[in-house]
Image (tube, rainbow over all chains, first blue to last red):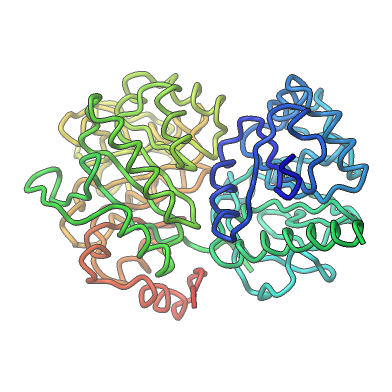
Amino acid sequence: MNAAKLTLVDYGAGNLPSVERALGRLGVETQRAATPEALAGSRAIVLPGVGHFGQLMRTLEERGLHGPLRDAIAGGTPFLGICLGLQALFVSSEEDPKQSGLGIVGGSVQPLPKTAKLPHMGWNQLRRLRPSVLLRGVRDDAYFYFAHSFAALDAPDAAVAVCDHGASFVAALEQENVLAVQFHPEKSGDPGALVLRNFVEFARAKTAREEA
Amino acid sequence: MSLARRIIPCLDTDGASVVKGVRFVNLRDAGDPAELAARYNREGADELVVLDIAASRDRRGTFLETIRRVAEQLAIPLTAGGGVRSVEEGRSILRAGADKLTVNTAAVLRPELIEELSREFGAQAVVLAIDAKRCAKCPDRSVAALHQASNSALASGAWEVFVRGGREATGRDAVAWAQEAVARGAGEILLTSMDRDGTRSGFDCALTAAVSRAVGVPVIASGGADNPADFLAVFSEGRADAALAASIFHDNLQRLGELKQFLASHGIPVRLVA
């Protein structure tokens, strides 16, 4: 059912409609999943997110989405995490130390240093660490929109790009089927649309390979 | 590589149409919000602010529909507000498609509102709007605020917070109020100089710098924009993180692309859109 669609995890995040609109402009059909049943069998999953780490993780647990989401990611389903959706991949976050994350990526999320204005709010550029699926075709000097106070300050092996605001932090990471960005592609004009398109094509290619 | 200074067109609406005038006087229709939004999105605006300056409760549904229509046009962030008094009203604005919401009068009357909104939606979604006016003797200037404001700002007096669309004085010091709001969870300050608003005589750089130095969150300067040099001044002397203007953009007196080229040529980091 709806197998060709891209699934957006609906945990009540404010940016979900924006992500839907941005994907809609690319001609991509999406469905929302607020229950484990709706998540089951997804060909590709996007976890949008704004707000508080603990609240996101608790809502995923309350809706029974935590386990199924972990399983889907572990099972190879193409996944895109946005903003808080990137932070959720880590083991933990200092924003809510008692609440564990999905633990897909090693390490933790920390507050950005107060030497710069927080939240890190606005358009910033990236520094590429290695070739990237999401940033394919994106100009090196492109700006992306950020709005966050916490970030992954210790870049894991999965990091493909970092950004600087008081400290260097992970702006994009890629680990097999798991892709994630700290910025908001749905709010980042043309470069943001290209990042979303790159994810959609990555998911399509992976599905096509598996069906072949 | 650094955070770009933002240029933010502002759509003051009566809920449905963009209106303009000086301080709510001589309002006239300046166009359809969605059409202007599409144009600014295309021309390189870094963000858009849409305000309901009437903010009457019976027209709330109309404003929410306006937010939806504007959000449809945008691939950039949207801030919306006007008359937000509660978490539920804030939620309806965010659900309609805004990324951030502004609070003003209701937060002065009941500062706990800032904490409630910040807890619910995150500090990054809560923008405190301050309408400030220069005064020789503000009754409520705190020592901390005076200390923070320092030098040039103090030499010219301080600034008092006004509410209800600038019609009512509060006796509160603008710098101290900004600090309190940030401590309560505001993630950004939208700072309007009432002295400059609508005058096209340049931003109030002293006010902007005083607030920007006093808080650790981004400050959006508003009121008085006329030409590129005004923006350069508010980003350098005024230490603004973003600058907002309305009529000069609506009337095509200033093109966004040319403004950003000017700023870039003077060393201000801006996002240039091809």
